[in-house]
Length: 401
Ligand SMILES: *Cc1c(COP(=O)(O)O)cnc(C)c1O
Image: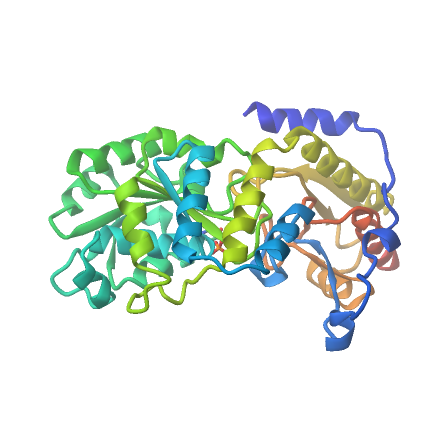
């Protein structure tokens, strides 16, 4: 993929640039109360990336402005939902769209829509789906914990491997064929073949692309290929509210998904409420995301990778290499590894010391992409953070030599 080649090529040619804005300025506390101080919850430097446990991404000022403005008026929520849905659909080239509570909420409502259609009796009964469509077919390699959103609708997930098995699994009670975008290369059935099977048997197909922007093209690529529904997070790469998401695709299904949630009280999705502030804020985040200078973002992320690499590579026996995760969080990262007979500390212990230090720093948790290494995502760092992270890792590693 040329994007990956370019990443490694440009990285070699980037001059060393220090942090552009001093950390003290970048993290200046707003006037008035300092809530984190008051509550005793320390802020962290986020070198992990977009993780719900680390509060996702940071909203841009225009997104926060939208929240502030919307918080001062009452509206008829359905009217707002309709108009914003139309705008979002137009921006993405979809028939229809709606704001949801995260990609999780999008998947749950999308599944409900495939089960109930616009039948009010069914909408009131779900997740008691006796006598209704009750199965969702998914490739084994596309199994993921977030499919609990689908199971919340009371359906059984039918796991299959081949195209023949998908076709054999489809019957009159099949609600949906579910695809996990980031597992595309792991499954035996590719995207186009999967979509075609759905069309042949008239069963809707849904693609979960939650964390797969950037690249921005992913917002529209699989929609154009023919998926009936797409679910994406609003609070990851798009930098809308952490709790927001989008569901877009076929008009009749989006209409049914809307019927399965607020303001309707007797619905499975009533708890998946979105506020007027979130509805407008994620629209603004999407507008911004579509017209952003993605190349400039990328160049900044590469600079951060270089800043961190240069800082730690000064320690003998330490190697810093740039890497790009394939699909999902596909942005510049750095992986730091070392000869543990020379630098006598384990990566997990360094992670703990970074966490316990001041400022507190999180890098990719758990085993990450390659176990027994330190991996850092560049895109959720604030200006100046890369230099701090590089310095802190340098300190801990050089102490262990
Ligand atoms: C993050 C994620 C979700 C959930 O998205 P939210 O916007 O947090 O609800 C679903 N699927 C995948 C693959 C994800 O990465």
